[in-house]
Image 1 (spheres, rainbow, N blue to C red):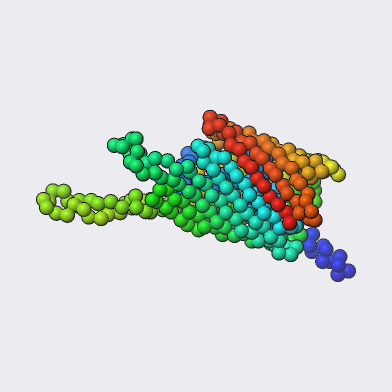
Image 2 (tube, rainbow, N blue to C red):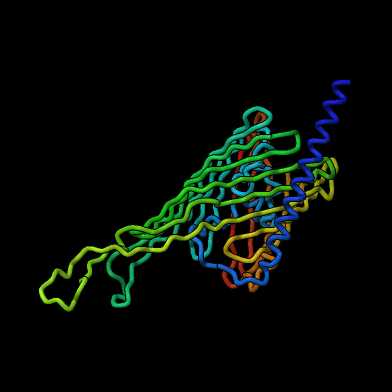
Length: 354
């Protein structure tokens, strides 16, 4: 009788967890339902590079990845997802971003037994070097400037039951523009529930919860004359401009994913996210992935439904898995995303399981 009793307790516990997850999703939707009628805070947050979608698979699926989160790019979407990896995985992504900028991401995930996993990762956005121009020297001052944005993080995730996992990340964020820089620390947290029904999964994640950022450096140092009416006083008093602090782009994501088709050789996964950014109206993403023998993948999606005058939204992509010696495999992915008048963005990703 003891095994039956334990099994019954386990089922009751899993049912309670599922109810809690569904309740959280409903509460989030109810609390934020009025946001469509509010004025957005677009352009009022720092470290906007953190909002760029990482990974060709995730972005090709319309960035509806919080409930999928089944590869090493999960650290950027839902840290709870890395417990789904049965083997270590190294991931690299290159994005040809807007205005000739480039965005690189790398992560390494390692399982710790059957119930937990750890990861380290980094993101970097680089702006091409350009000439420093001023109003009085529009052809250039002879100086050149560049900009770089960086985030470094570590993630830990654990299965609390055979269906429910919880994960979190700690990350260091830095922005540098010519002689100015700002840095802070933030955290990401996420949960993932896995069901037997059509392999359905429910995910919730909160990203970029941390301290404000404030620029400092040589450019906000200057010399002033505290009282020009006094003849002969020191007109070269060193002063520093007091700049404002800016919030990070806090993001809450809630999503669901399930397999519409499950057979020996074919799988069709449908995923959807509701997104709640701190600096814009809430919006909806949807996407899908078709897999043939888990070797060839075709993906499509649409992001940004609900944002007024959003640029683009369509995304397409695909990938191929190459099995190498032993248990090692290589995954090559590509994603195309439409950005309207800003043209398109191409993403390339490479990952290896070992």
